[in-house]
Length: 263
Image (cartoon, rainbow, N blue to C red; front, side, top):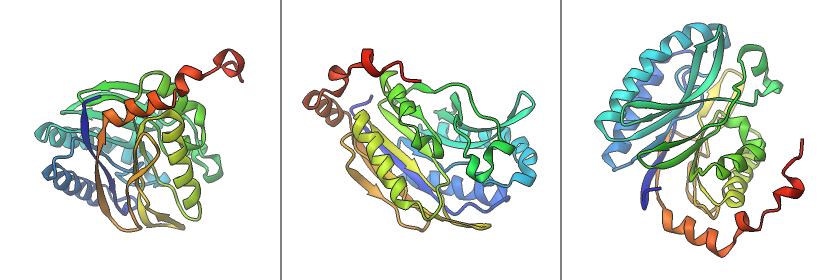
């Protein structure tokens, strides 16, 4: 990981089903954080149109154009940009987070865990693999929203060398404390940085609380959003992570021979 990385979680009210409005919001936000020297920006989950299930295929067809637009912005500003979009592939539609580094798509992560409570599994296909990718800023791991409730995924990414976890989300009320507690726990227990970008506002029957977070490797809150559109900005210091891992040697003291084969 670079010695210091300036990061941003971009939070906004996703206009359900309106790609052009959401693309304009994302472009303007990326321009604003680029002007502040941000090197890594994370957008919310399914940010181009939200969970507009009735028109999911049409929105997925727009994703290549959206990726081209965001890739050009990332290249212009020497940034890494991550956010999830509907992806049509293999005769199915996935909720896919794309890692764009200076204009190039270096990796794509398809959400592993479908939130069956809200019917995601009826409209979207689950992914089959994790993603930790080497970028110009360091090793980035990616997870999406409900994945947060599965700590095994985050430990696997940490063991694969992830230094920063990027998590786009659409996490609604009334589960604010779950969101905040689980994010801090994932950072603390894996001793890595977290950029979590939630959406805000009302979509249909759901009310999204925002509360995007930038967390240190100790789980400390470096920046936290309220319930309105905002771009959080903070700096991650690689020395802090290295010092913390030396002080509390969780990875050295692990006993995977005892619990590493849990099913």
